[in-house]
Image (cartoon, rainbow, N blue to C red; front, side, top):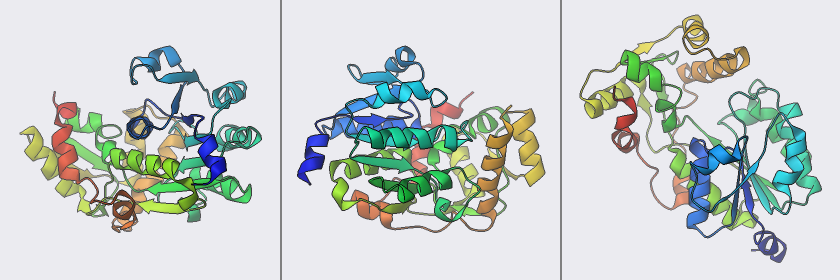
Length: 296
């Protein structure tokens, strides 16, 4: 490890999205490895109740650039992720990256999505280009579909309607567990020189259909859960009418799911296993572990 970075890591790693699925796992994995962490949240008082006791928690609001400097002051690195509700990265994430550079942070780990390097439609693409073109020391993590989508984006459909309703057709998905992503981020922060400038596509160890996912849920919950292959318009209407999501979030979420029909998430990439030094966590284990989330 370079001496400059070793000194930087006396300073904390700022983790955005620290109370979310991936950010929370990054916090846990970094703390477990003895790395200093500073969590950010729009409401620090509320966040402290959900995070490990004694953790440094500061305010950061993507919509308020005045919070960027204080949140990054004295930090050594940044875990950066885009909240689903943030569509305009040019006034939010990109200025945060610029502030990180001004303050001399040694490394940024950005949570992107699989395929973002070639997909100008998703907001992550612009963030990746900003990191690369700005010569900011970075590592880009490009996960496929998260297992946690089942406990988050799909939770109400499963718990209330006993169904998975997405426009994925017969597509198969190599679901990846956010806990594995948190461990990878901690590995990168622990040895950034080995991962500088890298972009990692990260998937689970097996690709399954949504019908097979419904079968796993049926077995874990003891009640039938079905897969309804939604149409594109039907899914967008469902997100708008039933889930009350904003238009840009509906667009991005629909585009990502439609890609599943074309096999965009079925490839099993060995990178995650290589970085972890073990097999990725299987979806069946995740479903059994989280079964209480979908119980009525």
